[in-house]
Image (tube, rainbow, N blue to C red):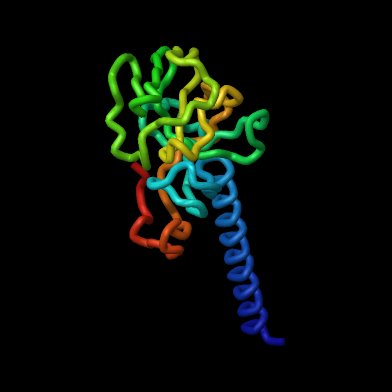
Length: 195
C-alpha cells in the first residue's frame, strides 16, 4: 500500500470520526433541550375544546424556565393524587386573587370582575365541590378547562387550587393537531403559537 493510499485512508477515518462526533453532539443537544427546556406533551381528553382537541401535541416550556403564570396561560400539570397523567388547563387566577363563580348565570369572577371568556365552549354551570368565593393561596394557581361542563379542574375539591410545583410547564406551541371532534380530520392550519 502506497503512502498516498495510507494518507487517503487516514483522511477518510478523520472525516468519519468528525461525522460521528457531530451526530452524537446533535443527539445530545436535542436530548438536553427536550429534557430541560421544552417538552412535547399530548392533550388527552376534551376538557380544553374548542382551544385544544384530544390528540393535539403541544410544545411545553419547562417550569424551571417559566414560573410567572398569569391569567390565560395554558399549563400542563401533574398532581398524582388527582390524576396520574398530566392534564392541560387554563390559568384563571394566581396567588392572592379571589375567585367566585355564579353557577346560575355561568359567570366566573376574579377579584369581583366578570371574566370575558371568548375562548370557552360554554358558560360555567357545573359545580364540583369547591366552595366559592375562594382566595388563591400563595404559590398556587386556579385552573379551569375551556370546555367548562366537561372538565375536571380547580372546581373539583380533589384538585382545588394547584401548587405551582405541580406545574410541568406552559404550553407555547401547537406542534401537531389531533383530530377534530366533529369532522375527525386534522386541521393543519391550527399549528402555531397558543394564545
